Amino acid sequence: MKIAINGAGIAGPALAYWLLEHGHEPVLIERAPAPRSGGYVIDFWGSGYDIAEKMGILPQLHQLGYNVGEVRFVDARGRKAGGFATEVFSRMTKGRFTSLQRSDLAATIYASIEGKVETLFGDGIASIEESPDHVRIGFEHAPPRDFDLVVGADGLHSRVRSLVFGEEAKFERFLGYNVAAFELTGYRPRDELAYVSHALAGRQVSRFSKRDDRTLFMLCWREREPAPIPGDDAGRRAALRREFAGMGWEVPAILAAMESVEDIYFDRVSQIEMPRWSKGRAALVGDAVACVSLLAGEGSGLAMAEAYVLAGEIARAGSDHAAALSRYEERMKPFLAAKQESARKFASSFVPETAFGVVFRNWMMRLMNIPPVADFFVGELSDDIDMPDYEAA
Ligand SMILES: Cc1cc2nc3c(=O)[nH]c(=O)nc-3n(C[C@H](O)[C@H](O)[C@H](O)COP(=O)(O)OP(=O)(O)OC[C@H]3O[C@@H](n4cnc5c(N)ncnc54)[C@H](O)[C@@H]3O)c2cc1C
Image (tube, rainbow, N blue to C red; front, side, top):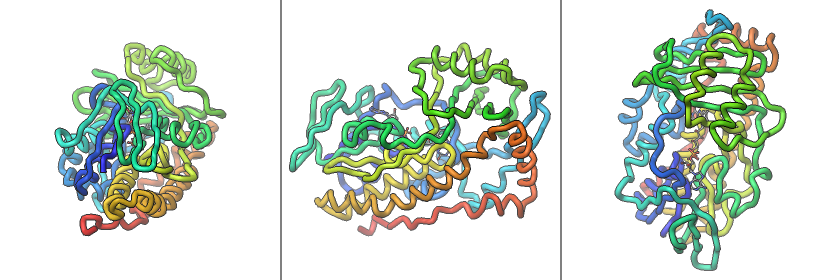
């Protein structure tokens, strides 16, 4: 089948990889003019890690990854107020864990299909018109083309989802936070392999020292209602200056340095809950269909698992795309719903709402240095789902 995939982030290229393995003809469409570099760092484990192993890309991912050793909370003067050694994650996943730039994961997956899959960079799906035996896709730039299926792998604010299912607000569950991330070169101080954070009631600033003298900053704050995202960097900088005014530690210096940054990630922390994962010849995958949010610490891996199952079910069902899409949904939706629920449970303690809550959280995190306590809190980090072996399909 010819399958149009909107979005070449994590889910899109992973889906293209597996469709290609099963002998289909995917076409990727990506709004950005080229694969992006830099950006925020993700933890990578679970079912996505297993899929990466099947794809043979684990050695590259570990080479690009960071063995983060410590999560450290500091007070307004930079003194350690809490934190823990992160070996617990490695222990609870039996070493099947790494942290890497989201863009490095995306680029590694894309490299595995580059030259084998047609990709339209700098374009996007603008219209979808379904008829009994195909779907006609209109693009923002390229001339219209016919496909057998169309898949939205275009993230939290999916265009395919809006075109097929209606406006985003119907499916978005806001978790009460906004998040921004950006990076700087040459920032000092550096703390290698440590995730260092300072929080006040409802606000948290974190930094992570990356290779090549770069530092990633992640700013997270509570927001009562979902607010529109400022459309440009100037608006984003102004919002961050306002939200983080008056904080201690390195925050004034970070905000001052931010003035030179031109690519600020800024979004609501939300989940996506879809009553149906497909309609006719259109399906959704990754954040577009079941965004778990950063609070799950696993969205990328889950997006890869969904892509693997979607491609596998398409392969198994032959030309019966309706059966494939409904089996994909049956298999993955309850699993994703459980992941979303546990992320929501974590939401209240992610950035505590009160000053007391921050102090309490910092103290609690010290207990995580006691291995049995850490093991108890983190629990068995494995995904409760069996990935079918579609190669045998
Ligand atoms: C701050 C932060 C921290 C996170 N931490 C973790 C973590 O620790 N572990 C983890 O596993 N996950 C984490 N995540 C979540 C993870 O990044 C996502 O779950 C994952 O990127 C989802 O992949 P995706 O391919 O579905 O969407 P995306 O990665 O968002 O990719 C969507 C792609 O579609 C493109 N696109 C968008 N709109 C259009 C359009 N109209 N036309 C064409 N193309 C379009 C975009 O340019 C992009 O390339 C975090 C997220 C955030 C924001």
